[in-house]
Image (cartoon, rainbow, N blue to C red; front, side, top):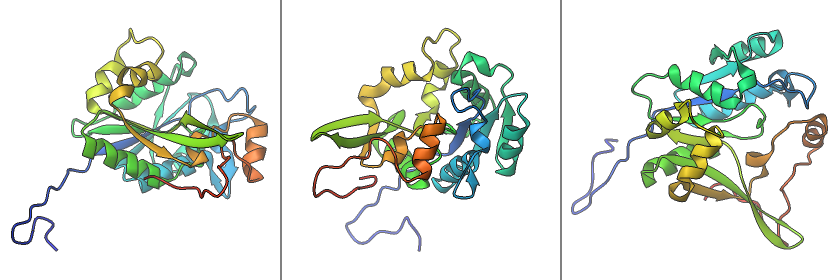
Length: 236
């Protein structure tokens, strides 16, 4: 059916889909884990494969995985995803270096990046798609999920991943004088961001240590308490 067709007296506004590239920073040293997180597995898929799959399922037209220069396991796992692989020669300078390398690879027709670290392999494509849609419909430059949870009867919030940055923020992210990395850019634009509140601990589950890994494998995740009688809900 022609999406431009409307009935008598009706009008339809078709919002453009943001051409989004997923970016997976996987060049960290994984010191707390003690081994390369990108190559670790959950339910038969590597962390990096799970994150790449989430970004693709969420509508990203391409995915870039940024890897360290000297880790064969991470390099192999990244190539196995079929994503574009970019080597970060100076990963010790922080995740912002991976973001900048990825932005340098983008064509002019890319509207946004969806930033999803390899440490968050539980995220699925529905939240990626929802954030992209929210950015488009609200005409903003930043979209983020916030997990709502309850502990001891007290409502709490925790900001999660992925973060979607529009092209309008690329210059700020690339600024060599930027202090605090992408987090600083998030704080600058947080008041005007599209915030999606969810009860979904996957968006805040950072698997950073062996105990985190074992907890997730056992079906336990942080920030998952719910008030009595409530049911988990996904993106609104």
